[in-house]
Length: 305
Image 1 (tube, rainbow, N blue to C red):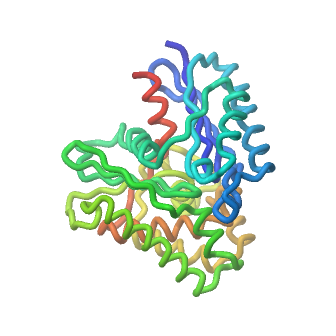
Image 2 (cartoon, rainbow, N blue to C red):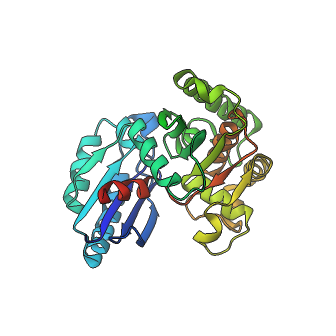
C-alpha cells in the first residue's frame, strides 16, 4: 500500500492528514479558511471564502504529490450542507485535488470522528461520548452496547458567535443568548438520543477539534504546539468554565496575545468554550479528555480497510 490522504473542509478550517501504509502520520496540516463565514445568515458560501479554501486545497495537493499519495477522501461538512451553492464548491474542490469531494451528513461526520478519536483509547468504549465541535455544528456520538448513535447539533463555534456574540468582548446578555441557544440544541440531541440525558457513572467524554485543542493549549500555557501534551490532556468542567469566563472578558486582541491561542481562533473561541462547557455539564461528567485524533484519522482508517 502507498500513502493515503484525508482532507476535511470544515466551516472554520481546512485540514489534511497523510498516513503511510502502517497508518503512521506523515504530514498533518491545518489552515483556518472560514469557508462557512456568513453562511448561517445568507445560506450561501462567499466567493472569497471559496477562493481561500480552494487555494489551500491546492497547497495540500502539492503535499499529496510529494508524498506519493494515490488514494484519498475529501469531505465537506456543515457549511457546505447549509449552502445553496455547496455543489459548486464540491466540484471545484474535486478538480483542484483530483479526489472526489463528498458531502457528509451529520451522522456520517460524527461516526468517522468517533472512529478516529477512540482508536487509541485504553479499555472499552461503551458509554463513551465523542463531542466534535465544528464551526457550524457539533456532533455528539455515543456508543451503547457496541452500537453507535450520532446527532448533529446546529451549534458550532462560528454559528454561535455570528448569531449571539457580536460585541468585543461579548456582553452578559449575549452570553446568555448563546447559552440558551446551545441548551436548546442539546435538548434536541437528547430528544433524538435519550440515553444522552440519563445518568451514567461509567460515561466518559472525549472532546475534538479546534476549540478543545485550543483550550487545552491555553490550559497548559503552551507557547509552541506539542501534540503529545495536547493529546489526552484532561480538561475539567471547572477549568472549561473558568477559561470560558476569562476569555469572554478579554477583547479579541487580548485573546490573540494569550499563550496557547491558535491564530485565527481568537474571535470564535468563546462560542466554542460555551458549547463545550454546556455539553459536558449536561452529560453529567466532571470534564473531558482532549483528543488530537478525529475525523481525519477516521477517514484515513476507512481508506486502509
